[in-house]
Length: 333
Image 1 (cartoon, rainbow, N blue to C red):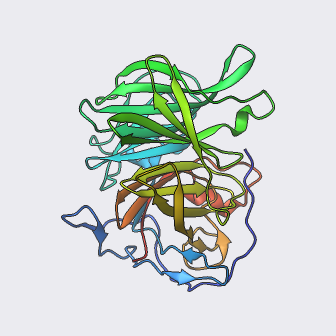
Image 2: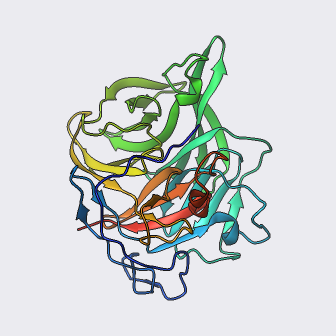
Image 3: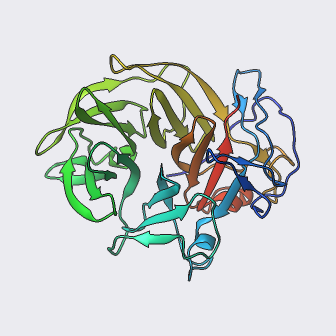
């Protein structure tokens, strides 16, 4: 899919910082980051449109640099991320393997690994985690031909990322819109039942799917607030009553509240990812750098992790500095 440089929003405070140098970062006991020369406090700047701007990332790295034996010629087209017990699990749409990365982002480390097997492009677009009783991971294939129609297909893995089975989602696309299908999924446990929230890339609709023996059956559909009118919708995550949705084309993040009594969302704040200069330095210019955000997960109430897909050849050159990467951001208080 194509990405575009979004129109210039209101100006924000420029903060000079050296990206991707994590040597002096410190991980606190609660898992948050502090200290280090690129661990700058979130700016919490309001633009004239009411959008807040995130501060510089407290840590980020190209994924290939984290995995032992890989180099810049290897592709990691990240499309989804889930934080679990000190590790980031990253799905890539060009691989059937899941990337497991330690929270501290150690480079060229045996602490990071690739899980699973399979060859060719996977069509994976989202990953989520079920921690109720027996742990499970779920990974969604955006849309797969099923007779004359296209449906998302949800793959289930055990807690060690060993593949178990695949089940169709009760949501349908045609050949015309199959490439704008499910871009993310989020697991919710409610009333003793497993649910998955999907995210439709082209519309921002959030189908609510309940697990049966043979199908993830649609039981409701959530509509985002009218203020969350993104050009595209690239991932969804839920933590408690917090829900977040990203847009890669708009380089933005929305965080709102998921009702505990019905399938609705309310309120929320839109955040813009920080900008930078033509050399990829965050805070040193007004160019859009984070134009490929495809995955998001909460680390805690104060932080999120996002991952970036590969930049396309028609994107501005500076956006390649942040592609195929993992990024950690503080959330403004």
